[in-house]
Image (cartoon, rainbow over all chains, first blue to last red; front, side, top):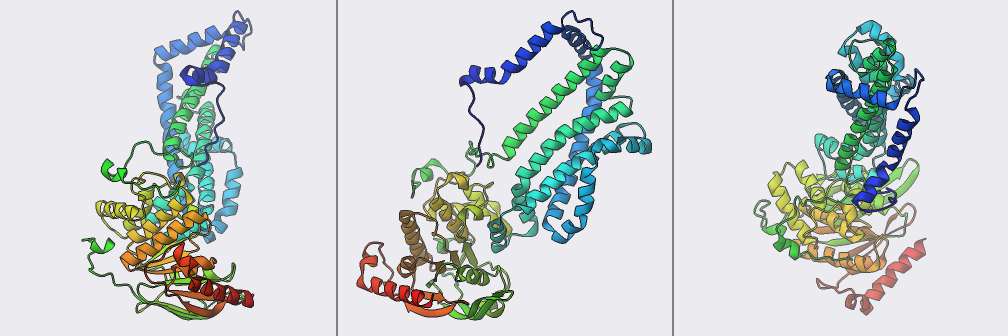
Length: 282
Length: 265
Protein backbone atom coordinates (compact mmCIF):
# COMPACT_ATOMS: atom_id res chain seq x y z
CA UNK A 1 0.00 0.00 0.00
CA UNK A 2 2.79 2.36 0.84
CA UNK A 3 5.94 1.22 -0.86
CA UNK A 4 8.18 4.21 -0.58
CA UNK A 5 11.62 2.67 -0.77
CA UNK A 6 13.89 4.99 -2.66
CA UNK A 7 15.53 3.99 -5.89
CA UNK A 8 18.92 2.29 -5.57
CA UNK A 9 21.96 3.92 -7.14
CA UNK A 10 22.49 1.10 -9.58
CA UNK A 11 20.65 -2.06 -10.52
CA UNK A 12 21.34 -5.76 -10.89
CA UNK A 13 22.61 -8.18 -8.23
CA UNK A 14 26.18 -6.87 -8.29
CA UNK A 15 24.99 -3.29 -8.32
CA UNK A 16 22.68 -3.76 -5.35
CA UNK A 17 25.35 -5.58 -3.33
CA UNK A 18 27.68 -2.68 -4.04
CA UNK A 19 25.02 -0.21 -2.96
CA UNK A 20 24.65 -1.94 0.36
CA UNK A 21 28.24 -2.64 1.25
CA UNK A 22 30.59 -0.08 -0.22
CA UNK A 23 30.48 2.29 2.74
CA UNK A 24 30.96 -0.32 5.54
CA UNK A 25 33.78 -1.91 3.56
CA UNK A 26 35.51 1.43 3.05
CA UNK A 27 35.18 2.30 6.75
CA UNK A 28 36.54 -1.05 7.89
CA UNK A 29 39.50 -0.78 5.54
CA UNK A 30 40.23 2.76 6.74
CA UNK A 31 40.01 1.62 10.37
CA UNK A 32 42.25 -1.37 9.71
CA UNK A 33 45.08 0.70 8.24
CA UNK A 34 44.67 3.76 10.44
CA UNK A 35 44.83 1.65 13.61
CA UNK A 36 47.64 -0.61 12.44
CA UNK A 37 50.60 -0.23 14.77
CA UNK A 38 48.55 1.89 17.17
CA UNK A 39 50.30 2.28 20.52
CA UNK A 40 47.24 3.74 22.28
CA UNK A 41 46.08 1.53 25.13
CA UNK A 42 42.41 2.31 24.47
CA UNK A 43 42.54 2.00 20.70
CA UNK A 44 44.31 -1.24 19.86
CA UNK A 45 44.86 -2.15 16.20
CA UNK A 46 41.79 -3.60 14.52
CA UNK A 47 43.87 -6.67 13.67
CA UNK A 48 44.33 -7.28 17.41
CA UNK A 49 40.57 -6.88 18.05
CA UNK A 50 39.75 -9.31 15.29
CA UNK A 51 42.30 -11.79 16.66
CA UNK A 52 40.66 -11.73 20.12
CA UNK A 53 37.20 -12.01 18.54
CA UNK A 54 38.32 -14.99 16.48
CA UNK A 55 39.99 -16.76 19.41
CA UNK A 56 36.98 -16.39 21.68
CA UNK A 57 34.63 -17.47 18.93
CA UNK A 58 36.69 -20.57 18.28
CA UNK A 59 37.17 -21.61 21.91
CA UNK A 60 33.41 -21.46 22.50
CA UNK A 61 33.56 -18.69 25.09
CA UNK A 62 31.55 -16.16 23.08
CA UNK A 63 29.07 -18.81 22.05
CA UNK A 64 28.37 -19.64 25.69
CA UNK A 65 27.83 -15.99 26.57
CA UNK A 66 25.68 -15.51 23.48
CA UNK A 67 23.41 -18.40 24.41
CA UNK A 68 22.91 -16.99 27.89
CA UNK A 69 22.21 -13.45 26.66
CA UNK A 70 20.05 -14.38 23.70
CA UNK A 71 17.90 -16.71 25.74
CA UNK A 72 17.17 -13.82 28.11
CA UNK A 73 16.58 -11.37 25.27
CA UNK A 74 14.27 -13.63 23.29
CA UNK A 75 12.34 -14.79 26.33
CA UNK A 76 12.04 -11.21 27.56
CA UNK A 77 10.90 -9.99 24.16
CA UNK A 78 8.39 -12.79 23.88
CA UNK A 79 6.83 -11.97 27.25
CA UNK A 80 6.84 -8.25 26.35
CA UNK A 81 5.14 -9.12 23.07
CA UNK A 82 2.36 -11.11 24.74
CA UNK A 83 1.81 -8.48 27.43
CA UNK A 84 2.09 -5.53 25.05
CA UNK A 85 -0.26 -6.87 22.39
CA UNK A 86 -2.71 -8.43 24.84
CA UNK A 87 -3.11 -5.37 27.03
CA UNK A 88 -2.77 -3.09 24.02
CA UNK A 89 -5.83 -4.62 22.36
CA UNK A 90 -7.75 -4.54 25.63
CA UNK A 91 -6.87 -0.96 26.55
CA UNK A 92 -7.17 0.29 22.98
CA UNK A 93 -10.74 -0.93 22.72
CA UNK A 94 -11.98 0.12 26.11
CA UNK A 95 -12.24 3.86 26.51
CA UNK A 96 -12.97 3.81 30.25
CA UNK A 97 -10.00 1.58 30.90
CA UNK A 98 -7.81 3.71 28.65
CA UNK A 99 -8.67 6.89 30.50
CA UNK A 100 -8.08 5.17 33.83
CA UNK A 101 -4.65 3.72 33.06
CA UNK A 102 -3.30 6.50 30.86
CA UNK A 103 -1.56 8.60 33.57
CA UNK A 104 -0.03 5.43 34.93
CA UNK A 105 1.20 4.40 31.48
CA UNK A 106 2.50 7.88 30.71
CA UNK A 107 4.54 7.78 33.91
CA UNK A 108 5.91 4.28 33.41
CA UNK A 109 6.79 5.08 29.83
CA UNK A 110 8.83 8.04 31.05
CA UNK A 111 10.87 5.83 33.38
CA UNK A 112 13.91 4.72 31.38
CA UNK A 113 14.18 0.95 31.45
CA UNK A 114 17.78 1.07 32.61
CA UNK A 115 16.80 3.13 35.67
CA UNK A 116 15.21 0.10 37.27
CA UNK A 117 18.32 -2.03 36.86
CA UNK A 118 19.80 -1.36 40.35
CA UNK A 119 16.52 -1.90 42.15
CA UNK A 120 15.72 -5.09 40.29
CA UNK A 121 19.20 -6.50 40.81
CA UNK A 122 19.08 -5.76 44.53
CA UNK A 123 15.63 -7.24 44.84
CA UNK A 124 16.08 -10.27 42.61
CA UNK A 125 19.80 -10.94 42.73
CA UNK A 126 21.88 -12.59 40.05
CA UNK A 127 20.85 -14.98 37.29
CA UNK A 128 18.58 -14.98 34.27
CA UNK A 129 15.45 -14.03 36.27
CA UNK A 130 16.25 -10.36 36.92
CA UNK A 131 17.82 -10.00 33.48
CA UNK A 132 14.61 -11.13 31.83
CA UNK A 133 12.51 -9.00 34.13
CA UNK A 134 14.43 -5.86 33.18
CA UNK A 135 14.02 -6.60 29.46
CA UNK A 136 10.30 -7.25 29.89
CA UNK A 137 9.85 -4.05 31.86
CA UNK A 138 11.53 -1.90 29.25
CA UNK A 139 10.28 -3.60 26.11
CA UNK A 140 6.61 -3.94 26.95
CA UNK A 141 5.88 -0.22 26.73
CA UNK A 142 6.76 0.52 23.10
CA UNK A 143 4.70 -2.48 22.01
CA UNK A 144 1.84 -1.69 24.38
CA UNK A 145 1.57 1.99 23.53
CA UNK A 146 1.89 1.43 19.79
CA UNK A 147 -0.75 -1.29 19.84
CA UNK A 148 -3.12 1.00 21.75
CA UNK A 149 -2.55 3.70 19.11
CA UNK A 150 -3.02 1.17 16.33
CA UNK A 151 -6.34 0.00 17.74
CA UNK A 152 -7.52 3.57 18.24
CA UNK A 153 -6.59 4.45 14.66
CA UNK A 154 -8.75 1.73 13.11
CA UNK A 155 -11.13 3.18 10.52
CA UNK A 156 -14.73 3.68 11.49
CA UNK A 157 -15.86 1.99 8.28
CA UNK A 158 -13.95 -1.17 9.21
CA UNK A 159 -15.71 -1.30 12.58
CA UNK A 160 -19.07 -0.69 10.86
CA UNK A 161 -18.40 -3.50 8.43
CA UNK A 162 -17.47 -5.90 11.20
CA UNK A 163 -20.65 -4.98 13.09
CA UNK A 164 -22.89 -5.11 10.02
CA UNK A 165 -21.65 -8.61 9.25
CA UNK A 166 -22.01 -9.64 12.88
CA UNK A 167 -18.47 -10.88 13.41
CA UNK A 168 -18.18 -12.67 16.74
CA UNK A 169 -15.83 -11.17 19.31
CA UNK A 170 -12.91 -13.59 18.97
CA UNK A 171 -12.98 -13.49 15.18
CA UNK A 172 -13.15 -9.69 15.28
CA UNK A 173 -10.14 -9.40 17.58
CA UNK A 174 -8.10 -11.98 15.69
CA UNK A 175 -8.94 -11.12 12.09
CA UNK A 176 -9.75 -7.42 12.22
CA UNK A 177 -8.39 -5.64 15.27
CA UNK A 178 -5.02 -7.37 15.44
CA UNK A 179 -4.10 -7.02 11.76
CA UNK A 180 -5.43 -3.46 11.67
CA UNK A 181 -3.12 -2.51 14.53
CA UNK A 182 -0.22 -4.62 13.29
CA UNK A 183 1.70 -1.95 11.35
CA UNK A 184 1.88 0.14 14.52
CA UNK A 185 2.56 -2.85 16.71
CA UNK A 186 5.46 -3.89 14.49
CA UNK A 187 6.95 -0.40 14.77
CA UNK A 188 6.79 -0.82 18.54
CA UNK A 189 8.42 -4.24 18.35
CA UNK A 190 11.25 -2.78 16.34
CA UNK A 191 11.94 -0.20 19.03
CA UNK A 192 11.77 -2.92 21.67
CA UNK A 193 14.19 -5.07 19.75
CA UNK A 194 17.03 -2.56 19.95
CA UNK A 195 16.00 -1.58 23.46
CA UNK A 196 16.25 -5.20 24.57
CA UNK A 197 19.94 -5.36 23.62
CA UNK A 198 20.69 -2.15 25.50
CA UNK A 199 18.93 -3.44 28.58
CA UNK A 200 20.67 -6.79 28.29
CA UNK A 201 24.12 -5.23 28.14
CA UNK A 202 23.50 -2.75 30.94
CA UNK A 203 21.93 -5.35 33.22
CA UNK A 204 24.87 -7.69 32.65
CA UNK A 205 27.32 -4.86 33.29
CA UNK A 206 25.80 -4.31 36.68
CA UNK A 207 25.47 -7.84 37.88
CA UNK A 208 25.56 -11.35 36.70
CA UNK A 209 28.21 -13.84 35.95
CA UNK A 210 27.49 -14.57 32.33
CA UNK A 211 26.42 -12.95 29.09
CA UNK A 212 27.83 -10.66 26.44
CA UNK A 213 27.71 -7.62 28.71
CA UNK A 214 29.72 -9.60 31.20
CA UNK A 215 32.24 -10.47 28.47
CA UNK A 216 32.78 -6.80 27.71
CA UNK A 217 33.03 -5.97 31.41
CA UNK A 218 35.61 -8.72 31.92
CA UNK A 219 37.74 -7.14 29.23
CA UNK A 220 37.64 -3.87 31.13
CA UNK A 221 38.44 -5.45 34.47
CA UNK A 222 41.35 -7.42 33.02
CA UNK A 223 42.71 -4.35 31.19
CA UNK A 224 42.16 -5.99 27.83
CA UNK A 225 40.70 -3.24 25.64
CA UNK A 226 40.84 -5.50 22.61
CA UNK A 227 38.31 -7.76 24.33
CA UNK A 228 36.08 -4.77 25.15
CA UNK A 229 36.13 -3.78 21.50
CA UNK A 230 35.62 -7.33 20.32
CA UNK A 231 32.57 -7.70 22.57
CA UNK A 232 31.15 -4.38 21.43
CA UNK A 233 31.53 -5.23 17.76
CA UNK A 234 30.09 -8.66 18.37
CA UNK A 235 26.98 -7.25 20.09
CA UNK A 236 26.62 -4.89 17.14
CA UNK A 237 26.67 -7.80 14.73
CA UNK A 238 24.12 -9.71 16.81
CA UNK A 239 21.85 -6.65 16.86
CA UNK A 240 22.22 -6.26 13.12
CA UNK A 241 21.29 -9.88 12.50
CA UNK A 242 18.25 -9.62 14.80
CA UNK A 243 17.13 -6.62 12.81
CA UNK A 244 17.54 -8.49 9.52
CA UNK A 245 15.36 -11.29 10.88
CA UNK A 246 12.84 -8.73 12.08
CA UNK A 247 12.64 -7.04 8.68
CA UNK A 248 12.13 -10.41 7.02
CA UNK A 249 9.27 -11.28 9.36
CA UNK A 250 7.78 -7.80 9.02
CA UNK A 251 7.67 -8.03 5.25
CA UNK A 252 5.95 -11.39 5.45
CA UNK A 253 3.36 -10.26 7.97
CA UNK A 254 2.77 -6.80 6.54
CA UNK A 255 3.04 -7.48 2.83
CA UNK A 256 -0.35 -5.84 2.37
CA UNK A 257 0.87 -2.72 4.14
CA UNK A 258 3.97 -2.38 2.00
CA UNK A 259 2.04 -3.02 -1.20
CA UNK A 260 3.53 -6.45 -1.93
CA UNK A 261 1.06 -8.66 -3.82
CA UNK A 262 0.85 -12.34 -2.94
CA UNK A 263 3.04 -14.35 -5.22
CA UNK A 264 1.77 -17.87 -4.66
CA UNK A 265 -1.89 -18.28 -5.47
CA UNK A 266 -3.71 -19.70 -2.48
CA UNK A 267 -7.37 -19.85 -3.27
CA UNK A 268 -7.47 -19.31 -6.97
CA UNK A 269 -9.38 -22.02 -8.78
CA UNK A 270 -8.19 -24.18 -11.65
CA UNK A 271 -7.05 -22.40 -14.83
CA UNK A 272 -10.32 -23.28 -16.56
CA UNK A 273 -12.28 -20.85 -14.39
CA UNK A 274 -9.45 -18.30 -14.32
CA UNK A 275 -9.48 -18.28 -18.10
CA UNK A 276 -13.06 -17.09 -18.04
CA UNK A 277 -12.21 -14.23 -15.74
CA UNK A 278 -13.89 -11.10 -16.91
CA UNK A 279 -12.13 -7.85 -16.32
CA UNK A 280 -15.01 -5.42 -16.16
CA UNK A 281 -12.92 -2.31 -15.70
CA UNK A 282 -9.49 -1.43 -16.87
CA UNK B 1 -27.58 -19.12 -8.54
CA UNK B 2 -27.66 -18.86 -4.78
CA UNK B 3 -31.09 -20.35 -5.04
CA UNK B 4 -29.67 -23.58 -6.44
CA UNK B 5 -27.14 -23.89 -3.66
CA UNK B 6 -27.79 -27.32 -2.17
CA UNK B 7 -26.45 -26.24 1.22
CA UNK B 8 -28.41 -23.06 1.70
CA UNK B 9 -31.26 -25.07 0.23
CA UNK B 10 -34.42 -23.08 0.07
CA UNK B 11 -36.21 -23.45 -3.25
CA UNK B 12 -37.33 -19.84 -3.13
CA UNK B 13 -35.53 -17.47 -0.74
CA UNK B 14 -37.85 -16.06 1.86
CA UNK B 15 -37.31 -12.36 1.47
CA UNK B 16 -38.95 -10.53 4.34
CA UNK B 17 -40.82 -7.27 3.98
CA UNK B 18 -39.13 -4.21 5.43
CA UNK B 19 -41.43 -1.79 7.21
CA UNK B 20 -40.32 1.60 8.44
CA UNK B 21 -42.77 3.24 10.79
CA UNK B 22 -42.65 6.83 12.02
CA UNK B 23 -38.90 6.69 12.14
CA UNK B 24 -37.16 9.73 13.59
CA UNK B 25 -33.56 10.39 14.46
CA UNK B 26 -31.97 13.23 16.35
CA UNK B 27 -28.38 13.86 17.27
CA UNK B 28 -28.77 15.74 20.52
CA UNK B 29 -30.88 18.78 19.71
CA UNK B 30 -30.46 18.40 15.96
CA UNK B 31 -33.36 16.61 14.35
CA UNK B 32 -32.22 14.83 11.20
CA UNK B 33 -35.11 12.58 10.25
CA UNK B 34 -38.75 13.18 11.10
CA UNK B 35 -41.57 10.70 10.99
CA UNK B 36 -40.46 8.56 8.07
CA UNK B 37 -42.65 5.69 6.96
CA UNK B 38 -42.24 3.34 4.03
CA UNK B 39 -42.52 -0.28 3.04
CA UNK B 40 -40.22 -2.41 0.94
CA UNK B 41 -41.91 -5.44 -0.55
CA UNK B 42 -39.92 -8.62 -1.23
CA UNK B 43 -37.85 -8.30 -4.39
CA UNK B 44 -38.37 -4.57 -4.75
CA UNK B 45 -35.67 -2.06 -5.57
CA UNK B 46 -36.21 1.13 -3.62
CA UNK B 47 -34.01 4.11 -4.26
CA UNK B 48 -33.92 6.78 -1.63
CA UNK B 49 -32.86 10.02 -3.20
CA UNK B 50 -32.22 13.40 -1.68
CA UNK B 51 -29.70 16.23 -1.63
CA UNK B 52 -26.32 15.75 0.02
CA UNK B 53 -26.44 16.00 3.79
CA UNK B 54 -30.17 15.35 4.03
CA UNK B 55 -29.73 12.33 6.28
CA UNK B 56 -29.76 9.46 3.80
CA UNK B 57 -26.86 7.72 5.43
CA UNK B 58 -28.43 8.17 8.85
CA UNK B 59 -31.57 6.51 7.55
CA UNK B 60 -29.60 3.60 6.16
CA UNK B 61 -27.71 3.16 9.41
CA UNK B 62 -31.03 3.00 11.25
CA UNK B 63 -32.33 0.46 8.73
CA UNK B 64 -29.27 -1.74 9.11
CA UNK B 65 -29.39 -1.74 12.88
CA UNK B 66 -26.01 -0.05 13.18
CA UNK B 67 -27.74 2.86 14.90
CA UNK B 68 -30.92 2.95 16.96
CA UNK B 69 -33.67 5.34 15.83
CA UNK B 70 -34.78 8.03 18.28
CA UNK B 71 -38.43 7.29 17.63
CA UNK B 72 -40.41 4.79 15.62
CA UNK B 73 -39.13 1.46 14.45
CA UNK B 74 -37.84 -0.63 11.56
CA UNK B 75 -39.25 -4.11 11.13
CA UNK B 76 -37.81 -6.90 9.01
CA UNK B 77 -40.47 -9.54 8.67
CA UNK B 78 -41.94 -9.79 12.15
CA UNK B 79 -38.86 -8.59 14.01
CA UNK B 80 -38.03 -5.10 15.17
CA UNK B 81 -34.48 -4.21 14.12
CA UNK B 82 -32.31 -3.50 17.15
CA UNK B 83 -28.94 -4.74 15.87
CA UNK B 84 -27.46 -5.81 12.53
CA UNK B 85 -29.37 -8.76 11.12
CA UNK B 86 -28.26 -11.88 9.27
CA UNK B 87 -30.58 -11.33 6.29
CA UNK B 88 -29.25 -7.83 5.59
CA UNK B 89 -26.07 -7.23 3.61
CA UNK B 90 -24.56 -3.78 3.43
CA UNK B 91 -22.48 -2.19 0.72
CA UNK B 92 -20.86 0.98 1.98
CA UNK B 93 -19.94 4.05 0.03
CA UNK B 94 -16.36 3.91 1.26
CA UNK B 95 -15.24 0.74 -0.49
CA UNK B 96 -11.62 1.42 0.39
CA UNK B 97 -12.52 1.37 4.05
CA UNK B 98 -15.00 -1.48 4.09
CA UNK B 99 -12.78 -4.19 2.64
CA UNK B 100 -9.98 -5.37 4.91
CA UNK B 101 -6.72 -4.42 3.15
CA UNK B 102 -4.85 -7.30 4.83
CA UNK B 103 -7.17 -9.90 3.33
CA UNK B 104 -7.42 -11.08 -0.26
CA UNK B 105 -10.76 -10.72 -2.01
CA UNK B 106 -11.81 -14.25 -1.18
CA UNK B 107 -10.76 -13.89 2.46
CA UNK B 108 -12.82 -10.72 2.66
CA UNK B 109 -15.83 -12.57 1.35
CA UNK B 110 -15.39 -15.59 3.63
CA UNK B 111 -14.78 -13.52 6.78
CA UNK B 112 -18.50 -13.07 7.63
CA UNK B 113 -19.08 -16.72 6.71
CA UNK B 114 -16.49 -17.79 9.28
CA UNK B 115 -18.44 -15.68 11.75
CA UNK B 116 -21.56 -17.59 10.84
CA UNK B 117 -19.78 -20.85 11.56
CA UNK B 118 -19.95 -22.10 7.99
CA UNK B 119 -17.30 -24.81 7.34
CA UNK B 120 -14.23 -23.52 5.54
CA UNK B 121 -14.57 -25.57 2.36
CA UNK B 122 -18.20 -24.61 1.95
CA UNK B 123 -17.45 -20.96 2.64
CA UNK B 124 -14.71 -20.92 0.02
CA UNK B 125 -16.95 -22.62 -2.48
CA UNK B 126 -19.71 -20.11 -1.87
CA UNK B 127 -17.32 -17.16 -1.99
CA UNK B 128 -15.91 -18.37 -5.28
CA UNK B 129 -19.33 -18.59 -6.84
CA UNK B 130 -20.29 -15.13 -5.66
CA UNK B 131 -17.04 -13.72 -6.98
CA UNK B 132 -17.91 -15.25 -10.32
CA UNK B 133 -21.43 -13.86 -10.00
CA UNK B 134 -20.06 -10.31 -9.89
CA UNK B 135 -17.65 -10.98 -12.77
CA UNK B 136 -14.44 -11.26 -10.78
CA UNK B 137 -13.55 -14.95 -11.10
CA UNK B 138 -9.77 -15.42 -11.08
CA UNK B 139 -9.16 -12.54 -8.66
CA UNK B 140 -9.40 -14.67 -5.49
CA UNK B 141 -5.88 -13.97 -4.27
CA UNK B 142 -5.73 -10.28 -5.13
CA UNK B 143 -5.72 -7.77 -2.34
CA UNK B 144 -8.48 -5.16 -2.58
CA UNK B 145 -5.95 -2.41 -3.21
CA UNK B 146 -4.77 -4.24 -6.30
CA UNK B 147 -8.25 -3.79 -7.80
CA UNK B 148 -9.92 -0.73 -9.29
CA UNK B 149 -12.63 1.06 -7.34
CA UNK B 150 -15.38 -0.58 -9.34
CA UNK B 151 -13.91 -4.02 -8.79
CA UNK B 152 -13.59 -3.38 -5.07
CA UNK B 153 -17.25 -2.48 -4.94
CA UNK B 154 -18.03 -5.71 -6.81
CA UNK B 155 -16.16 -7.59 -4.08
CA UNK B 156 -18.27 -5.81 -1.47
CA UNK B 157 -21.41 -6.89 -3.34
CA UNK B 158 -20.11 -10.46 -3.58
CA UNK B 159 -19.53 -10.42 0.16
CA UNK B 160 -23.15 -9.43 0.76
CA UNK B 161 -24.36 -12.17 -1.61
CA UNK B 162 -22.19 -14.85 -0.02
CA UNK B 163 -23.51 -13.78 3.37
CA UNK B 164 -26.84 -14.90 1.97
CA UNK B 165 -28.35 -11.45 2.31
CA UNK B 166 -31.94 -11.21 1.16
CA UNK B 167 -31.96 -7.49 1.56
CA UNK B 168 -29.14 -5.42 0.14
CA UNK B 169 -28.60 -2.02 1.70
CA UNK B 170 -26.41 0.22 -0.42
CA UNK B 171 -25.17 3.59 0.74
CA UNK B 172 -24.25 5.68 -2.30
CA UNK B 173 -22.30 2.67 -3.50
CA UNK B 174 -21.25 4.10 -6.84
CA UNK B 175 -20.86 7.75 -5.86
CA UNK B 176 -17.11 7.91 -6.21
CA UNK B 177 -16.80 5.86 -9.39
CA UNK B 178 -16.47 7.12 -12.95
CA UNK B 179 -19.58 7.17 -15.14
CA UNK B 180 -18.88 4.05 -17.21
CA UNK B 181 -18.04 1.95 -14.14
CA UNK B 182 -21.13 3.27 -12.40
CA UNK B 183 -23.32 2.18 -15.32
CA UNK B 184 -21.77 -1.30 -15.29
CA UNK B 185 -22.38 -1.69 -11.57
CA UNK B 186 -25.94 -0.36 -11.80
CA UNK B 187 -26.64 -3.01 -14.41
CA UNK B 188 -24.99 -5.63 -12.21
CA UNK B 189 -27.26 -4.75 -9.27
CA UNK B 190 -30.30 -4.74 -11.49
CA UNK B 191 -29.36 -8.10 -12.92
CA UNK B 192 -28.63 -9.65 -9.52
CA UNK B 193 -31.90 -8.67 -8.00
CA UNK B 194 -33.76 -10.04 -11.02
CA UNK B 195 -31.99 -13.39 -10.84
CA UNK B 196 -31.83 -13.74 -7.07
CA UNK B 197 -35.08 -11.93 -6.27
CA UNK B 198 -33.53 -10.02 -3.40
CA UNK B 199 -34.73 -6.65 -2.17
CA UNK B 200 -32.46 -3.68 -2.69
CA UNK B 201 -32.57 -0.42 -0.77
CA UNK B 202 -30.18 1.99 -2.38
CA UNK B 203 -29.43 5.48 -1.20
CA UNK B 204 -28.14 7.96 -3.76
CA UNK B 205 -28.01 11.63 -4.61
CA UNK B 206 -27.95 10.76 -8.30
CA UNK B 207 -31.51 11.14 -9.60
CA UNK B 208 -30.73 9.39 -12.89
CA UNK B 209 -29.39 6.41 -11.02
CA UNK B 210 -32.45 6.30 -8.79
CA UNK B 211 -34.95 6.43 -11.64
CA UNK B 212 -32.98 3.95 -13.72
CA UNK B 213 -32.74 1.30 -11.01
CA UNK B 214 -35.83 1.71 -8.88
CA UNK B 215 -39.25 0.18 -8.76
CA UNK B 216 -40.02 3.07 -6.49
CA UNK B 217 -38.10 6.24 -5.75
CA UNK B 218 -38.53 7.75 -2.31
CA UNK B 219 -37.68 11.42 -2.30
CA UNK B 220 -36.26 12.80 0.94
CA UNK B 221 -35.95 16.49 1.56
CA UNK B 222 -36.12 19.20 4.16
CA UNK B 223 -34.52 19.77 7.52
CA UNK B 224 -35.37 17.60 9.34
CA UNK B 225 -35.80 15.31 6.37
CA UNK B 226 -39.04 13.59 5.61
CA UNK B 227 -40.50 11.74 2.64
CA UNK B 228 -41.86 14.41 0.29
CA UNK B 229 -42.80 12.08 -2.53
CA UNK B 230 -42.88 8.45 -3.55
CA UNK B 231 -42.56 7.90 -7.27
CA UNK B 232 -43.49 4.60 -8.93
CA UNK B 233 -41.20 3.72 -11.80
CA UNK B 234 -42.51 1.29 -14.36
CA UNK B 235 -39.82 0.47 -16.89
CA UNK B 236 -40.16 -3.29 -16.40
CA UNK B 237 -37.46 -5.85 -15.82
CA UNK B 238 -35.40 -5.02 -18.92
CA UNK B 239 -33.66 -1.71 -18.75
CA UNK B 240 -30.87 -0.28 -20.82
CA UNK B 241 -28.56 2.58 -19.95
CA UNK B 242 -29.15 4.28 -23.30
CA UNK B 243 -32.70 3.30 -24.26
CA UNK B 244 -34.36 3.58 -20.87
CA UNK B 245 -32.70 6.89 -20.16
CA UNK B 246 -33.91 8.35 -23.47
CA UNK B 247 -37.55 7.45 -22.86
CA UNK B 248 -39.80 10.52 -22.49
CA UNK B 249 -41.17 8.97 -19.29
CA UNK B 250 -37.63 8.87 -17.87
CA UNK B 251 -37.05 12.59 -18.31
CA UNK B 252 -40.52 13.30 -16.97
CA UNK B 253 -39.83 11.42 -13.72
CA UNK B 254 -36.37 12.88 -13.52
CA UNK B 255 -37.71 16.39 -13.90
CA UNK B 256 -40.43 15.80 -11.34
CA UNK B 257 -37.98 14.60 -8.68
CA UNK B 258 -35.47 17.32 -9.44
CA UNK B 259 -38.16 19.95 -9.05
CA UNK B 260 -39.30 18.54 -5.74
CA UNK B 261 -35.83 18.51 -4.31
CA UNK B 262 -35.13 22.01 -5.56
CA UNK B 263 -38.37 23.46 -4.31
CA UNK B 264 -37.71 22.20 -0.81
CA UNK B 265 -34.14 23.42 -0.49
